[in-house]
Amino acid sequence: MESFWRRLRYYGLGFGLGLILTFGIFNTRGCSWTPENRVKEAINKRVWIIDNQDVRTFYKEHKLNDKKFHRLIQDADISFTKSIRHGRHKVYDFTFTDGKNKEAHCLARMTDESFVVEFIPFVKNVKALRKIKPSEYSGLIVHAPKNKHLVYSEDSPGLKEHLRDLGISSDLQLQKQLLNGAFDYQKSRLKEQPRPVHVFKFRPTLRPRLQVTATCIWYKDKIKVYSLSEERLHF
Image (cartoon, rainbow, N blue to C red):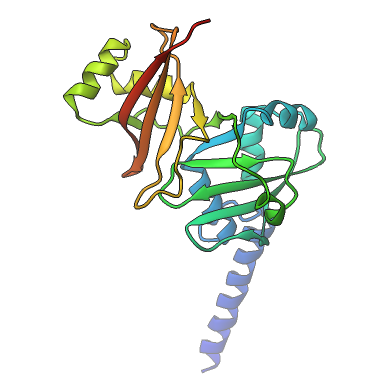
């Protein structure tokens, strides 16, 4: 019996040291099961966007660029008490150390079954966010998952022919064009059931006088483009 209690004490000591190493030295980064890291894992699987009218000011004020912002968010603190954690539409409150080694803050909004996460600077809290109207501008893509097969087009003869007319002959080319474009806040329908509808606009490399609108959904962890339209630019 004494041997049992001795082994139990050793086990408890080892478990305690493991927790100290995990939460102290590694700052929970190695623990995918923590609530904070589960949120970050979900965010990292998505395309990150920031309002085109805010991103330049936000980056300049905090001495950031796309790569630095992505890196700093990995070590950011999430205040769950100030976040909307339940339901289909979630908003997380992030605080991180910026490029000037000062505290910075933003909100991150995402919807279940959506492949975008919208980072919102200059808004203090969730309560203030509820009073803000949807942006009239576009969302700039500041980060996308490193997956060269992230985007694909629906297997439709009409859609494939439309892409060829635009000079886009493969899904790899389509992905490059789409992720170099912008997210359309007004036309996207993230509250759509059963899946949110995402709309992006881009100008094809081989036909720069056209603005293409691509309508997409998130399907099996990939971006599926199922509709295209275009308009001619007169400038």
